[in-house]
Amino acid sequence: MRILISGVCGFVGSTLAKTLLANGGGHQVMGFDNFIRPGSEGNRAELKALGVKLFHVDLRAASDLETLPPAGWVIDAAANPSVLAGVDGRTSSRQLVEHNLGGTINLLEYCKTHQAGFMLLSTSRVYSIAPLTSLKVTAVNDAFAPAPGSPLPGGLSAAGLDETFTTTAPISLYGATKLASEAMALEYGETFGFPVFVNRCGVLAGAGQFGRADQGIFAYWINSWRQKRPLKYLGFGGHGHQVRDCLHPRDLAPLLEKQMKLPKLAPADRVANVSGGAASAMSLRQLSDWCRNRFGNHQVAADGTDRPFDIPWIVLDSGKAARLWNWQPASKTPAILEEIARHAEANPGWLDLSAPL
Image (cartoon, rainbow, N blue to C red; front, side):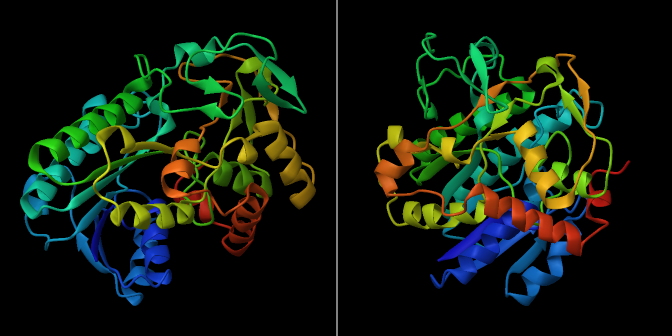
């Protein structure tokens, strides 16, 4: 199978390329990148050595994609992945839409031309902010959890949010670009007759991630702690109790391969959550405890100022993926954190690539 990966030199794209090749499925992997993300250039040599055919392509330029050879499947791993994108002054809202939505449409046109299957790596941020910020939570072992006995919105349980949880706005500009991309992908697939899968990912993490405070939080926190850089607990009283789940992108590869072999599912089965789930979830305070045990003491400041888009607890329920494809993540959170820590020790200047002081 010839597989094309967008954003192939980013953390997720490069991890998937290496994992798909290592799994021994006989895949031919190629990919493209525009190399605007600091640090992505560093993955080029390793991927080339593994036999990945690389192209320098800007996803926003439709004519760039016309130069690419045909593929059987496309994995869309290119995006501006920050919930603050388009509103933080680093990128404009128009740039965000051009990258995340316009770029996906250009890929869908490529799929239409070559009758290639399409896999969109989406996000937990397509789910509505309001019911999550109003969710009654309680701190247990320094981590928020839904308060026992309080009513839960539809689609939410102790296992997390499932695919029926509301996606009504507001979901952030970033979330809106991904939700719109999901809709366009499913429509293109139905209209032009090629298979489409939408995988809504939890927080992705692992060694080699270009951590920033607004994305790659696990890598950012561990690298910052080790280097004794300033860290803050933001919002929610400044206690660091906010919770996220954790998923290594290499664990996506077996799922994607199963989906490639089963392209004729009903439309309702083409959208699924994929995450580490409740078993992988931890709070910033718990992450700090892990860092303290690993690297020694470091002071974290408290800033209880509430910010837009901040959510106290968000964990995805991947039960649907488990039922349909017998999928579950193989990498446990402690192993992922240790992998990041060892990479941080081996690359002391890593954080400067994407999170300069």
